[in-house]
Image (tube, rainbow, N blue to C red; front, side, top):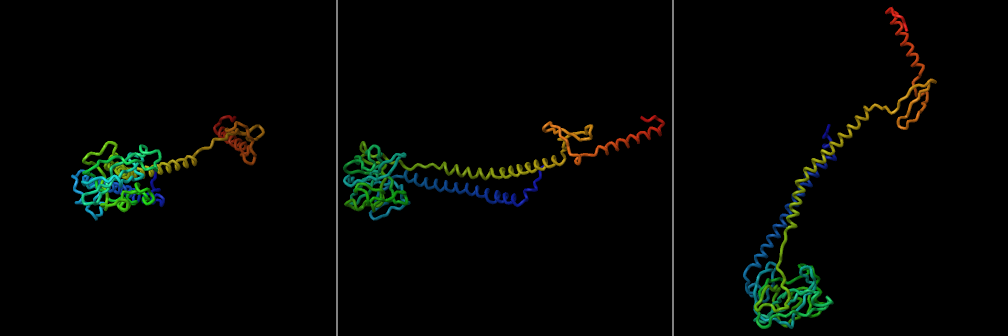
Length: 328
């Protein structure tokens, strides 16, 4: 019969506390934590996608000369008109697209006021440019004359935001590590506006052989949702696991107690024997089948057994005589 008295022992009380006051609350909290990450990310994604879907505004309205582009202005759609300065273009190293290594192509767009804004034309694949990835590839063509560009405004890149070490100072003049005004200002003969424009369209249209357009941001929140569900499933399963462990312990204790009772009341019939003609007590070892002779000190006295038998016979004769019957 099951007994559950063990659940009040110190070891099991600690297990109860761990289950109900630590693990289950922790699993529930972790689920809400993942839900919060998902909702916060989803909200930020909504802002970005809304900004990308908005009509472009004039660059002067959001990034005038002397203005520093804030992180909150990232992905604001802007438009600007000017002409490309192909004599001062830059290749941005260590940029990948669809897991393929390559370069970004940045060309200054000189504006009517004499300042310029950096335009990220797009991406070119490393394997399509040179057998030596350290060699600067040729610049792809860009439209000549007056050009109107549209694109997403980007703040200056930093090592903190890109995790790319800024070693521009050690690179050739037409290569940079980050798209940032401080790294390029000394390499062009005009004043640069802060930030850059990630090109999405231009008039006239990009020429054949131009850099590949950089795809807009895409988001996948499956990981956060999956982790949220996982932690809450753990919280639901834990009480059943707790109860199952208690039942298993009760069954094991009951089985152990039953085995002890069987050992206490078991009749041992391993050995059987009898006296031989010489009065020796012989028995057969059932395990091996061999005859074994025991020490007399360890066996009952056969004479005592004979005396008992004689007394029993005398008593039977007396009873028969009293009854008028002949004795045997």
